Image (cartoon, rainbow, N blue to C red; front, side, top):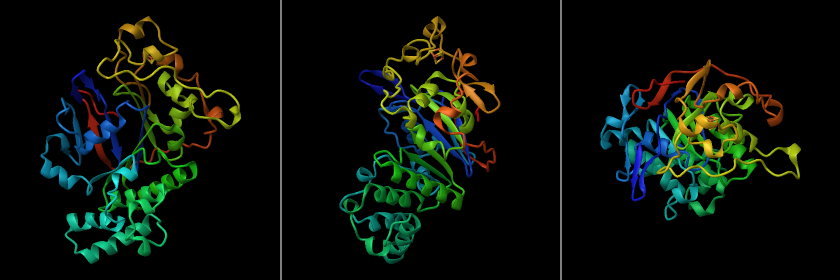
Length: 350
Ligand code: SF4
């Protein structure tokens, strides 16, 4: 998938293949500009053409490639089958309508309910996402709620039609840590009630440690590592994943400088030759500057990585003690496969 811009063609998603099962949480991680949100928007079919052009690949939901269906079909998929929570609740909610009206609209438009029944459903949903005094607050406007409560309203709208897949794009950004934890708990609770597949998009590894089953790490529009959460946190195989993990602030490092990955992600219209990460990678050698690493090689059961030197990292950077994530336990119980994306000619991978 590419954006055709005045500065050139930006290959925003390239070779991104993953699947998602019922009851499963897949976290897609990476810095801003790595292609996470664009991937989600491509799945939802909400990218504007132009400038966005899907040049290949597939998004398979219940046996149908969503990239081949027309907008009329996608309107029945969005919200009812695959739903999305967007990054910024304040700008996603309409400031001139009450929250109850906006939630009830889902039922009026998609289920043909009358105004009174739709409002009752809205109140029930507000209660389900734990908004206190929902009946009294149903006619309040978005600005009358706190950031955390607005995010709950967005979640209520996203789950209104009982979707099978929920994509949450940075659902806790700009919230304080306590509210972040409450929102993540709520998402997990709703998932276990309705058996949704959950895709969690975030730049923050700290947020997903307790909730994700699998993690896909993106850089410059590509997947660079994919693994079960337990394996990835304990033993990252890609230098970029290692850098992200080392960037998590630690309580035992008070007064010290925060670790950070030097440099910036590349401009996608001018991706460097060789491995796109090489200008920032402390493990880079000559081959990294000239040859692109093979896409997601299976290096261990359930582990895929795109790096020339993965074998030098795997098993040598165990971070369990450092990150305090020793409580993570592998969980392989998966439900039915719901969603699958893959690039041209590339086998769908787990
Ligand atoms: Fe670093 Fe080379 Fe691996 Fe790229 S291929 S991540 S530059 S070691």
